[in-house]
Amino acid sequence: MAETIGFIGLGNLGSPMAANLLEAGHPLAIYNRTASKADALVARGATRANRAVDTVTTGGIVVSLLWDDASVESIVTSDGFLDRLGPGGVHVSMSTLSPEGSKRLAAMHARHGSLFVEAPIFGRPEAAVARTLWIACAGPAPAKARARPLLEAMGAQGVYDFGEDIGAATMVKLAGNFLIISAASSLAEALSLVRRSGFDPRPVVEMLTQTLFPAPIYQTYGRMLAQGAVTTGQSDIPVKDLGLFQKTAEQAQFPAPISRLLLDLRERQSS
Image (cartoon, rainbow, N blue to C red; front, top):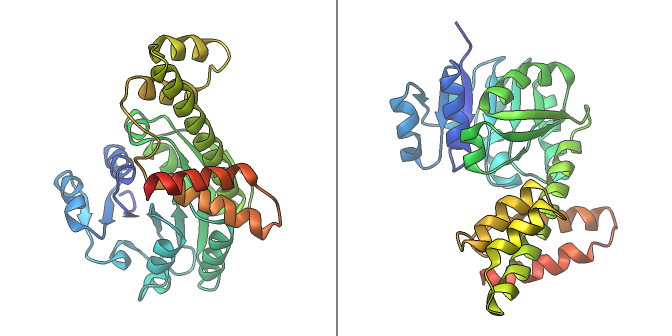
């Protein structure tokens, strides 16, 4: 029988990824703070856990997809989590964390003989359903070897290995999210000016994303913005991720004026 995988965090992205694991034949023990979010997966055969620690098997694999450093750390330091995971156990963290936080979590695991893999995700929930996610990973080679088939089963079309140094994959995620937010913000401003000037932004997006900017971020967000399906002020995620980027830049004593400007703009939009 396939080993039971623990899965913690059933938000908009975690739910379809967990569903992909079930569809691939992996038994799941699932936990979410809002218990009702587990109902659909339980109906499909997953086992509901009443606590995060109840998803963990000694020497097994547990996946977490949570909000930030504090939420992951609260799970890891909860009563019995690391003791039960024990020697040889693997925790695959797919949350967007700070490199400093990721290193701190890895050290906690090492003290209990378990292994920590960071595997942050690029992709929206619909990309999880379509199995077109991109995942960066870093951590001990044996742990990554165990995790990789699961990452692919969750919906990764590509897994990029950034070595064994914890923090490397998280840095890729922060850099990527900064570029995504930058592109989305610029698109929103450009297309708003087109619309305000009395012109249809849809053919503008069509032309520019087929010529100068033929990249998925411009194509996807450009179409959504042109159709009025999304605005750049709807989510708390950009403020969180820009804040992590700024904090990491400050720790590296590196000036990051563009991210500071974007963060100021986003904070004003969300207030």
